[in-house]
Structure formats: structure tokens, C-alpha cells
Amino acid sequence: MIRALDDRGGTAVTDPAHAARAFRETYGREPRLFRAPGRVNLVGEHTDYNEGFVLPMALERNTVVAAAARPDHRLRACSADHGQEGEVDLDAPPGARRGSWLDYVEGTARVLEERFGRVPGADLLIAGDVPEGAGLSSSAALEMSVATALASLAGFSLDRRALALAGQAAEHRFVGTRCGIMDQLVSMLGQAGHALLIDCRSLDTRPIPLYPERAAVLLFDSGVRHRHSSGEYNVRRAQCEEAGARLAALLPGVRALRDVAPDALERHASALPEPLLRRARHVVTEIERTTLAASALSKGDLAGFGRLMFASHRSLRDDFEVSVPELDALVQAAAGAPGVFGARMTGGGFGGCTVALVESGQAEAAGAAIAKAFATRFGRVPAWFATRAADGAGEITGWPVPDEHQRGLPPGS
Ligand code: GLA
Image 1: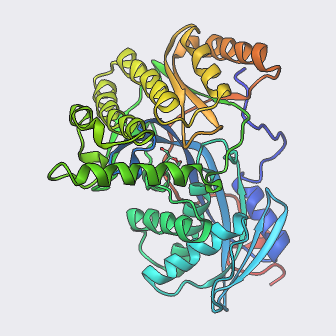
Image 2: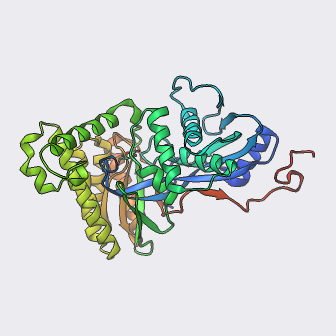
Image 3: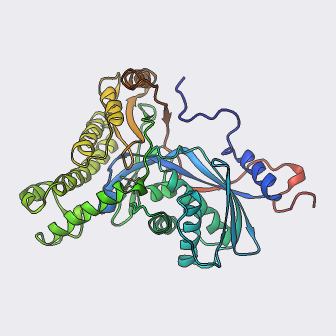
């Protein structure tokens, strides 16, 4: 049996009927239900905010929001995972950051209101099974599930790109991470059975088929938890911007590192002091790797795709310096495991997960071998699981509504 990451056992609150029941118990009325997935990025790391390409897929794991409008302009939110409640008065000016999940909820609501018009107050119950701090974008899943819920309650049309951009802005302003657009966009636009090639300049997307009958996607949790807002992420982004600005002053037509070809970078290497040169080298080679990887995958060349995953990891480790020994060990173990096409760290880095693409028939054996090698070195067995590409965010319909609680009617009426 392939083990589950962070397996909670019992009935998950992310089960729609269970989330609805928890909402009823908390607020005494019927909710509508919405979901948005986390993501795993297959290749194209730290390229989104350099206006380059990324190739993520949406996970089968979600944040679920049970929601019902209120007559006033307040958000009451309850996080089943944190066992916490919070309240936001949208008529009052925003206060200081709390450093908690409520910042994402408040930020998303306020940015939606600025951009699309008044959102109603709402009662929200939030539950998720995207592990936090594991590089699988639980933050974007939270923003996009709340955005989908509030936009639907407000009657806004669901322009998926616009909602993704609103979530990104919320994270910049209300959380303090200057993230790119990858996570929010794939959480909104993911397609089952496909990875999504995203041009982070034009926001055009192209679904690229994965081959579930030929290859499994395995995730391994290093157990090392990161926090982007703690600073290193923003430092990397500032270094990339600085490198881009220096090259723009020398090369006509350059607006961002996206516009710099790897050979042009090497010709102008003397313009960039360390560590800017290595940061830029990662970005420009990673953008090239991502487009090559998308064409390899389109052609069904899984071995070629896998080689690019390994190369991506080396570049993130040596040039971008966002890996940690636990992630390196998981990738190294994957390189020696049966049936593995490729592996790399995934997400922002400094902890979280690695992703491996493995021949379907070898998934069990490869997973066990990688986990064993890790356990031998670090003295603990890492959680790992197989995942498939899922659809992006939406309303959950068709969940069972018990007779005594018809939708829209308060209990007892
Ligand atoms: C985080 C950010 C993304 C992206 C990745 C690194 O997940 O939220 O925008 O920059 O890191 O590729």
C-alpha cells in the first residue's frame, strides 16, 4: 500500500458531507461548498516571478470552504484544521498582520472587493488536506477556495485568471510573501490528467497530457517545514530583479530574466557579482528546461523529461541555493531507485517535498526504496504518496443534504 502523506484517519472534514455538518453545527444553517486544490510543480521553479514558464499540476488534495452569506459585512471564519475562529469587519480598515491563516482570508476578501465590487459578509468553515509548509501550496488552495466561495456568493462571474491574480495580490499585501502567479493559477485552471504549461508573462496556459498508465507521480515529504514570508523567498526574488535590471541596462529588449538566453547571460557574466550570476543562471536555464520538458512530455519522452527534472534539482541546489540536505538525499535516493525517470525538489524550497516521476509498475518498489534510503540517513521514515492531476477550483455540488436540513433553510424551520 502506498502510504498517505499526513494521513489523519477517520472521516476527513474535507469530505463534503462532513464539512457541511461541521458548518451546520457551528453556524446553525446550510452552506454552499467550494474547493480549491494544492499543486505540485513538475519543473520550472522560481521562474514565475521572472515572467518565465512553469509546469505544475493540481493535486487531488484540496481546501474546502463551506460558506453562507450574512446580511452584514463581516466575515466569521472557523478553521477546522487549526481549531481556531476569527472575525473580520470588512467595513473597518485592515489592522496589522496576524501571521495566521486569517490573513489569507481577509486579504482575499478585501482584494476581491477592491477589484470586483462589494462582497457580502459570510460565515465560513475551512478545512483542508493539503499539508502546510510542504511546498504543495496550501496557501494558494486557501486563497482560491475563499475567492471562489466569496465570488460565487457575491454573484461575480468566475474569471479564473482574475481570481488567481487577486489571490496573489492578497498574499503580497496581507501576508507579505511576494509570490509569483503559478500556485493560484494552477489551483484555478488545473485539468485532470494534465500538467499545465503556464507562460507567466501572458498568463496563457496549455494542458500537457501526463501518462498515468505509464508513469506515477510520487511525492516525498522531507518533514522540514519552511515559511516563505520568513524572508529567503523575498530575498531570492529581489536578487533576480536586481540581476534582470543590470542585464536590461546592457541588452536591448530585456525586461526581465525571461528575455535573457543562457548564452547571452554567459557573455555578460561580468556584469553580475555573485550571487546574482548564479541566481540568474538558475532562472534562465530553468526557463529553457521547462519548455524542453513540456515538449518532451508532449511527445511521451518520459526519460528525457526525467533528465530535465534531475538537472532542475542540481540548479536549484547549487545556483539558486534553496535546497536542504533532506531534499538532496530524497533526490539522490530516487536516482538509484527502480523505474525512476526523474526527481527534484518542488515548490519554493528550504524544506517541503520532492516529486518523482516513476514507471507505473515500479511505483511501490521505488517509493519504498527511496523512503528506506532516507530513513537510513535521517533516522525517520518520510511520508510519501502517489498523486494524480486534478481539476482546478469550483463549487462542490451533489453532496447529500439530510431531509431535516433542506438547503437554504435554517434548522427547525
Ligand atoms: C512558491 C511561490 C510560487 C513560485 C514557487 C517557486 O510556491 O508561491 O509563486 O515562485 O514558490 O517556483
